[in-house]
Amino acid sequence: MSPALALRAKGTFRHGVHPEEFKERTAAMAIERMPFVDEYVLPLSQHTGAPSKPVVVEGDRVLRGQRIADADGFISTALHAPVTGRVKAIELRPHPSGKRMRSVVIEADPFSDQRLTPDLPRPDEAMSGAEIAQCVQQAGLVGLGGAAFPSHVKLQVPGGRTARFVILNGCECEPYLTCDHRVMVERAEPVLHGMRIIMQCLGVDRGYVGVELNKPDAIEALRRAAGDDPRIRVEGLKVKYPQGAEKMLIDAIFRKEVPSGKLPLDIEMVVNNVGTAAALSDLFRTGQPLIERAVTVTGPGVRRPANLMVPIGTPLAAVLDYCGGLHADTRQVILGGPMMGQAQKALDVPVLKGVSGVLAFTEPFPVRQEDPCIRCGRCVEACPMLLNPARLAQLARYERVDDLGPQHLMDCFECASCSFVCPSNIPLVQYMRLGKAMMRQRRV
Image 1 (cartoon, rainbow, N blue to C red):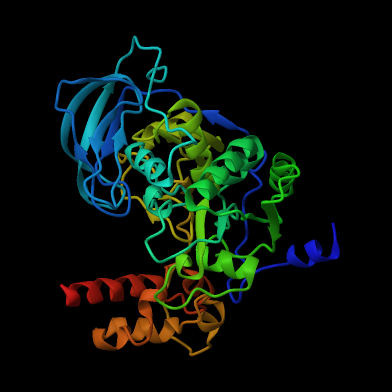
Image 2 (cartoon, one colour):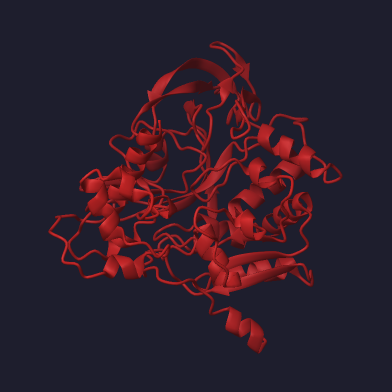
């Protein structure tokens, strides 16, 4: 490695934390395919923006990959059947958010071979960027890093703006999760194929893939797949949380800060997840819409940890059963990573497009017994957005809503670094969420 590359390999962002990784149980496990089950629940609300609107009715027969709901607005995407079967109902069902959401329930056909529907509409690389973005919206693609932001939005640059760089996020900095790691190792060529499509849509000729140095096999696979392509660089980055956040990733690679209240596009950059790029490649090569995703199932409460390719809508209980079930002393199940994921009150919820992990713990993660703030400043040192979490939490606690905006609460992306380092175990990130909810209510 040249001295310049070696220097860049040490890149990272300011502040952040170093939680224990806990990735060793699944990091070397190849992705295996989750068997089909009897019933799938597809909530119409699975992504940022407006829910999808159904185009099927109860009793309809659907084929695997068939569109069952259309986008309902610009920031919205379509939804597709993960299996061939029959629409059993369109009704309210439990959702990982804790609410009950309108969902399409599909009963799988036990006699179907569950092959992908032939002759699915497939975009062509000769299409314009706008045409490709429309196909991506119709294919239901969203960001697979956890936020589930509709992918077609990032493939279009508004008038008067330009994009110069595309960045793929392969950091996967959350503890326990290894599904992105395995996608990079096993599907490096589709990842870079998807990246080139994104670059083509945006008219960009430089692309970067940021991968933390605890994934050397992924870095090697991507560099081998990139070959001599001068447009693509695979950057090794220091291991730190939350480096997978797009603003932190930009800081780590380019030493540039996204201004407060702005987006990466405001500094001519677009960030996508490696899994999203691989899904985009699948759409172009086979016409497959987003009907499945890689998920890490692990934690002390899981009998058989695994990386699985799971059809969207698979019941959480079925995923855990396939992994041997839970140990008797399991006390908590989280969808996503332990830092930003959501604890579930029951196992009757489905896997959504944005679910990257299913984690089971024999002790709640983390254990909490709140004490008074001791003004130590550790949360300030940890916050990657350079905020004062203790101050913001105090304002939220006493409902001083008018003071939250000037303190830049909306810059917080709820990474929970502040909660992680707090010696008093104050649930700081929960206060951030409460404060944001009060600000939204005040605006309404």
